[in-house]
Length: 82
Image (cartoon, rainbow, N blue to C red; front, side):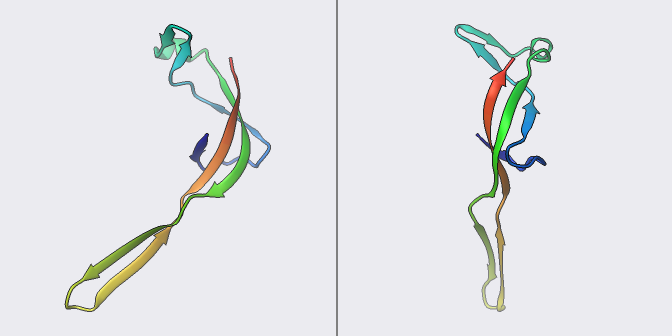
């Protein structure tokens, strides 16, 4: 699973909040029930996403602007849901 950058080095573990719990036929989304659930994930690597190029151009004025952006991402593997 890929998330926005998490301040944890590769090989570390993080805890994530549970948003929805599906157990066979039973689906739980109540906040009171999900407060008891903990999701633990292992950080596999920190990486950067694909480059996005933003360009602005105005006709007849000579105005042009080019800018790039790459988002900081973290790849994680869910190890346990308890």
